[in-house]
Image (cartoon, rainbow over all chains, first blue to last red; front, side, top):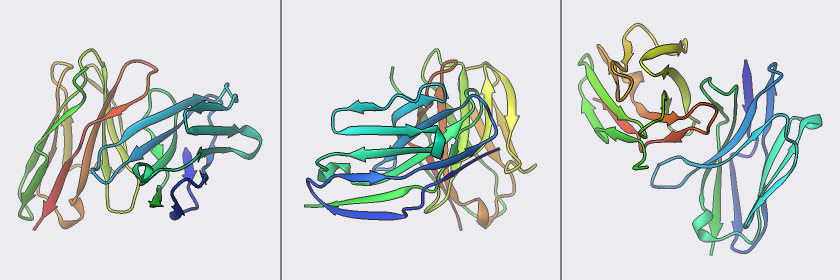
Length: 113
Length: 112
């Protein structure tokens, strides 16, 4: 069984601020994936990143970075120099590869101009 | 890739009616997934197919729900005798083996 907790229901920051979205997971699987999706107001789920549990190397993609720490069961997501277009609901989750994904409840990120 | 396509985008029906949704996955994606998302929640897994075989079903998938993928390409999700609680966004996703899932825009079901 998998469980994903996104404790921050809503975050509001002013444009150009950095913001970190927290994600804590629970799993009994020895091999698993962690991922982030973005859901803008238009509604479609947009894939951002997926990490294998064997790979704890942090990743940076432009203004986005992800910090995976197995010791704390966390997979946090940071947006640097936020922009209004980053406003969306962000979902963290986990999955066992071929299985269905388990999503957190999401963090609603509001970037104010 | 043209993306995952779902039809209709929005379905309004009266309680007790049957509804059917269709999902066309990205071509050559052999895995297809159905999820349900209610307001303020993350998507919840319903079922998944590898080719035409339905390999896993969530306990959320009551006996009023049935999904098919007859030729391993498109899939349909049918809800019989709809109830108020079935109102939700129904999402379809597809993937290749061990690759990330890509989602369609969903079908929003409203039960009157």
